[in-house]
Length: 406
Image (cartoon, rainbow, N blue to C red; front, side):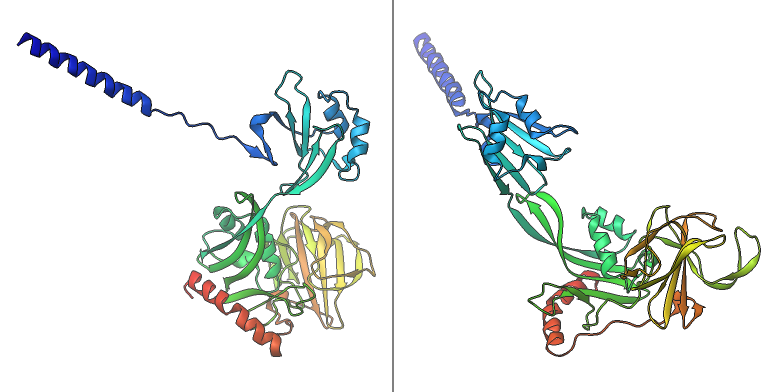
């Protein structure tokens, strides 16, 4: 019996050892993935990433590296047809790839003028070479919409969309919508394409395919359309093919608020008397650009004790506009200006309690309330262009309507 027990114990120990051995054999170490950037395997080099500082040049940067028996002047001459070293700008990133041996020689210099492109200066051979590369860009379609819970800029920010899209949208709808009058609860919908570098790095909005906003209870659409397919010129139209461009912009300032309206009797905050206020006040920080609301000729510029620095623009035989209290005038009398052109900067010159622009409007020589005018609108698409446009926007409009549950 003792012999049998001993045999059992030996067998148990052998089986246990085999199990432990099996466990050890199943363990594997995964190799760390090597990083490849700009077409180079970083594992093959000592890598230095840095930013060009003010006063630095291509020459001063590589001169401070071990470039062997090469001369900076010779390198610059060899690559001048492919890369002008004078175009290097400070605050731009660059990368140095150095050899992993004891000499730690500079092998490659990479300069990135922007997020999309980069220059490679290859010093590995006796003759330096330079070439430009553009990173691959992917366009991804994005649809957002629903009910506004805050301003347009904040709404886009919450959706991780670049702020520049808000500016683009306000320009498109500038003739139709005063975005400071949009209310929480108003519906909106946006369809656009975003750029991604290397399929992962966000690089902003490429194009706006379609949009709508609820404004004063009405749905205002915007669809891009190219009437002449050879011109490349795109204009925006509503769902009926009517251009969004009107003779006048809604406001002379983007992202401002009305602090005083046109009235026949207002208590003047400086003079402390009751008098007519024949304009609309838009408050904004000092230095904010003031745009002319329509094209025309600068009729007058100047300064008075009440108006401060001002500009008056004659648009045609019927309409004129005036812009008061500027901190700076940027146009001259007799100058032709285009719609939306910056003609001055917001200030508080003259009789003003704070920075704003008083926007005044004349019709047939009489001052009127610009906010109550039924101003001329643009033309509509006709014929084949309208038919082509309506066919083009049909699926887009369905998408927009489904976003806003219209």
